[in-house]
Image (cartoon, rainbow, N blue to C red):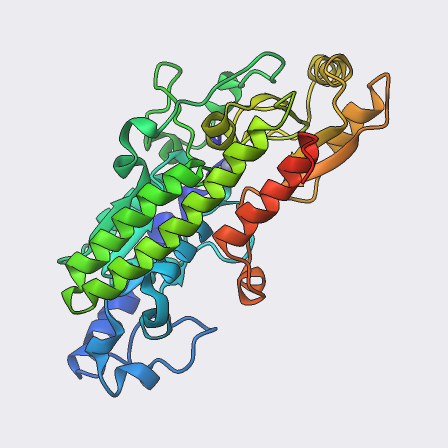
Length: 368
Ligand SMILES: [Zn+2]
């Protein structure tokens, strides 16, 4: 899905050199036993000595999450302890996670954390590298795609999608493409695993168990918080099931990239889309536009869907090419561009999935 992204990994060795230098300084600081010399402190966080000065152990494990859903789940499971524990979110400025490359501060956070949570898809090839380059004794990792096992799906190309351009992507810079061995024979797994509430439940259980294991003093808190959050996720999952069961025509048409395979599969929703997964392409061929416009007419769809992001031109072009031309464009939020500002104004995984349910009701013409 993301193989087409040109990964700018050429800066990696230079960053690592810089990181090594910073870490050497960091270690010297820490040997002074304050913990306040932590490297690359989050600019948004208060002075790092605030907690560390009194009782560093109270803060619990230092957790780094690569993307927003993992980060938000972790906060829910930490509950009140999140204040002290301060989990870090790496990709927090709305940047597309498929083209993210870590800066030196990101690497320093990984080097310094007790637990790293990441998805483990193609876009995360940099994570494995960063872990290898920043060894830390006792550091734990949670790779969501491992813990989800056979719930992880291969990316799917359905009728009408732009075919993936394998030729094009094979010509990136040497280093970037050695990492995944992503040749035509290698199955491409869909990494948008968080867009399934059922997967979210499993991920939260795993995060809760891991925290309990790492921080037994607070195990009971983690267990309680996990249970109550799981109930909310499962309640919402049930509402999705009910909504879809009330639709006479559960089909969605995306004039966009398509990261929602897990969500549509959970509830048996049929879909058409311009691109499989998160292809870097934003330009669709004439054939794709006419196919999707034809489907919208044939199925009497009132809405063409897009994902979060600003470019909805393709969806509009599809509408313009239907016979009807009256379809509205609706967006489902795939949480791939959640920013720190969004988080500060209260955006949570659950609230986004609740909003997505409202969009789905509209798109599937289900009345309250
Ligand atoms: Zn994506």
